[in-house]
Length: 222
Image (cartoon, rainbow, N blue to C red; front, top):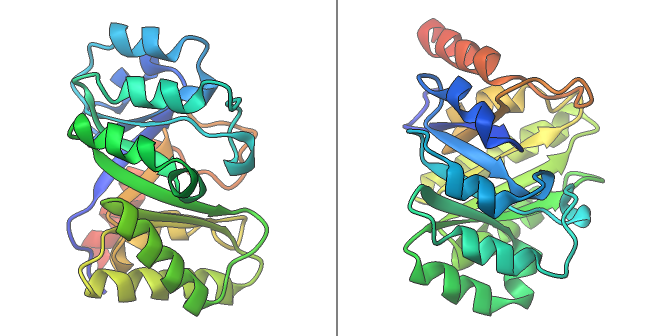
C-alpha cells in the first residue's frame, strides 16, 4: 500500500486562521457558507497558501441559502488566490452555466457528492465518481459509514478510480469512517482534509496538525 502524491487541505470558515496552516497544508479550503462576508474576506486575504472555496447549502451539510449562493461562488473564483472551487454534483447538474463561468476563471473544479445517510454500493459509488469526474477535475465523495464494509467500499472505489487515472478524494463520516481521513490517500485520494482548528462539535474530525503527523507516521511505517 503506497500513497501517490496528495495534497493536504486545512479547512476553515475564517481566513484569519489560514496562517496556522502554513508550513503544514498545501491548500486552505475556505467554507464560505460559514463566513459573514466571504467575498470581503477573500479580498483581504494575504496568505501564501492557495485556496479551495466552497459554499455549501444545508442539504450538503452547509448553511448557505440558495438566493445568491452560486453567484457568490462564481465571484470567488475570480480572486487570484483561488485555485480550486468545490461544487456539488447536484448543483452542477442543475446549473451547468456555473461550470462554464468557473472555467472562464481557469480554476480546477472539485465536483462533490454527499450522502450523509448511508454508503452506496460499490457499483453506485463508481457511477457517481464517473459522473463527478465528467463534470470536473476531481471527484469528491463523502458518505456515512455504519459498518466496516462501508469504509472498505469507499476505499476500494477510490483505488479502482485512481488506477483508471481519475482524480478522487473524500472520506467516510462517523466513528467507523474516521480512519478514512488518514488512509484514503493510500488508496488513491488526491486531497486529505482536516479543520485547521479543531471543532468540538465534529466528533469524527481530525485536526490539521494531528492529521499531518498521522500521515507522516503511516508513510514512514510502511
